Image 1: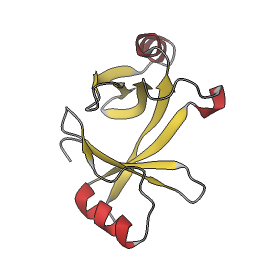
Image 2 (image 1 turned 180 degrees about the horizontal axis):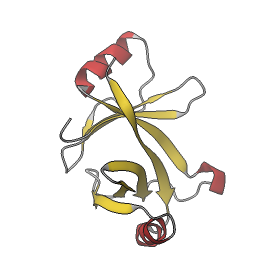
Image 3 (image 1 turned 90 degrees about the horizontal axis):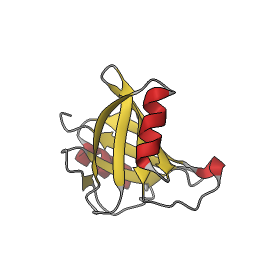
Length: 128
């Protein structure tokens, strides 16, 4: 297994600009990256401290969730995501999407379900 640590928590937001401002000004995080998702619809922003991303803001996924349902997923940093996908398939993991997604910045991810249906992301940063 190649989990290298905690990657980030994904939070769904209605207005990414407003949320970026909040997480910078109030929480004291630094905007580290932002871009339009590969699907051309969702906007993503990654904020953190030092060199560690700890929050991913997601605009355009599902704005109709109750306040307690805004946390979208928990992400773990991995290396060699392709071998992790193979290992998870061998264990019978239930995948949310059928393939690994590569983002415009070169990072890769996949989602699968935990035992209570929670979304878990394995995330490989662009520099592994």
